[in-house]
Length: 621
Image (cartoon, rainbow, N blue to C red; front, side, top):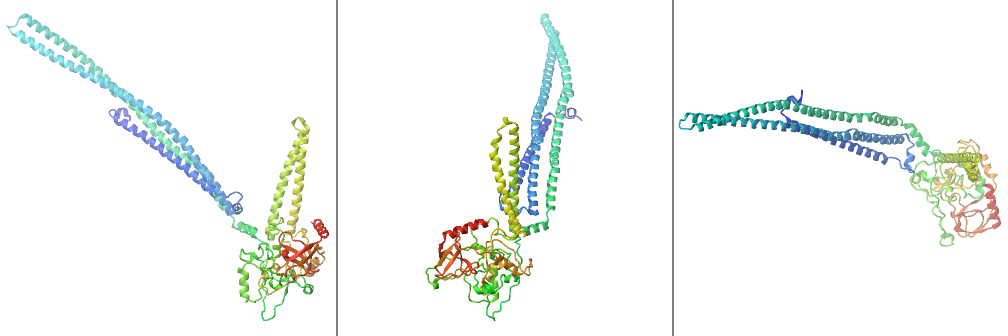
C-alpha cells in the first residue's frame, strides 16, 4: 500500500491532508501547554492553601499542635505541599518532553513537507512542459501534412492542364516534393517527441511521483507516530509521579491513623489541670438560730480572746469549694485581679468612712439566692494573693495553680539546661581553639580567648544557680522539699459566716499570703497529721520586727482577709512599709496584725529599725 501508486493523481488532496496533520499536531501542542498551565496553577493554589493553614510562628496556634489530631492535620498540610510539588514536576516534564519536543518537530516537519511538495510541483511542471512540446510537434506535423497534400493536388492539377507551361508544372512539382519532405521531417520530429514524452510520462507516474509521494507518506506516518509517542509520554509523566503521590496519600493516611483520642484527652488534662480538689458539701445554715462566727483558717480580723480560744486551722476539715470553671464562675474566685486599696474618705468623721467595696451585706437572704449569687456573680472579697507585691506574674509562677505551676517550672528548668549545654559547647570549642593556639602560636594568640572563656564560665555558673533555684521551687511543688522561699506569715482570726461573700474568701483558697499555692493539710485529707502539729510550726515563728509607728487618720473596717480594722487616732506599729501597691502592714499586738491602706495612716519610720529590717530580709533571702 503506497501513496505513489494508489494516489498518483491526488497531489492536491495529499497537500491538504498533510497540512491538516500539521494543524492537528499544533493543536495537541496547545492542549499540552494549557495542561501544564493548569498543573502549575493547581500546584500554586495547593501551596497557598497549605501555607494559609500552617501555624504561625510565635502564636497561640503552635501550642495547639501538640495534640495528635492537629499534628495529623499539620502532616496533611506538609504532604499537600509535596503533592503540589509533584504537579509542578508534571508541568515541567510535559513542557520539556512534549511541548518543547513537538514544537521543534513541527518546524522540521513543515520544512520537510515544503521540500517534498516542491519536488512534486517541479515534476509536474516538467511533464507538462513535455506535453506541450509533444502537442506543438503534433500540430506542426499535421500542418505540414496538409500543406503537402495541397501542394500535391496543385501539382496534379497543373500537370493535367495543357494550357500551363512546362515551367509552371515543374515549379508545382518541386513545391509538392518540398512539402512532402517537410511533412516527413515533421513526422520524424513528432515521432521522436512522442517517444520522449511517453518515456518522461512513464518516469513521472511510475518513478518520480511515487518516490515523492512515498516520502510524503513516510513523513505523515512519522508525524502520526510522533503524536502517538507524545500521548504515551503524556500518560507516562503522570504515571511517574503516581508512586510519590501515593506515598503522600499514604503519609496522610498514616497521620490520620496516628490520631490518638485518649492521648489528646490526656493532653487536655495536662494543659488545664489545676491540681485543686473538687468542692465539698455546703454546710447547712440554720436561720432559726443566731448566726455564730466561725473560725477561718487564714483570717487576720480575729479578736484577741477568740484568736486564742479557737483551735487554729480548725476549719480545714470542711470541704473546700475549689473552682474549676471560667470567668464569672468559680474560677474567678481564685484568679481575681489585684485589688487596689479603697480611697481615703472625704472627711475624718467615722460616720463618713465607707466600708469599701468589700462591705458585707447585713441583710440575710435565702440560701438559694446566696448560692445563685455565688455561682454567677463576680467575687467581691479578694484573696490575700491580690495584696502580693507587684502586679506582674512572679518568677516562681506562684500565681498559677499547682499543676500548671509544676509544668511551667519544669519547662523553665529544661530551657535553662539547654542554655547551659549551649554555653558549655561554646566553652569546649574555645578550649580546643586555645589548645590549638598554644601548640601553634602562629595561628593565633591563646590569651585572646581567655576573656571569653571567663565570661562563659560566669554565664554557666549563673545559669546553674538559676537551675537550682527553679529546681527548688519545682521540688516544693512536687512535695519533695519544704517551703524555703519566704517565711510563712502568722495568720489567725475569725471569719464572719453571715457575709454573703464568704465563699470568695481565701479560707477556701490554697494560696499562702505571699501569693503561692500550698496544698491542703487536714486530718481528713492527704497528710493525716493532727492540726496541733501544724499549728506549732506557726507558733514557733519569730514575729517580724517593727520598723516604726503609725497613726490612723481614718477609721478602716478590715473586711478582707489579711486586713485589720483600725479606729481613727489609734497608734499602731509598722512592720512592713508600702512597696508600691498602696498597702502598709501594721501590728496592734502579738496576735493582731494585717494590712491597711497607706492613705488611711500616717507613718513614722525608725531609720535604724528600718535598716535592721532590710538586713534581716537580705539574710533570710
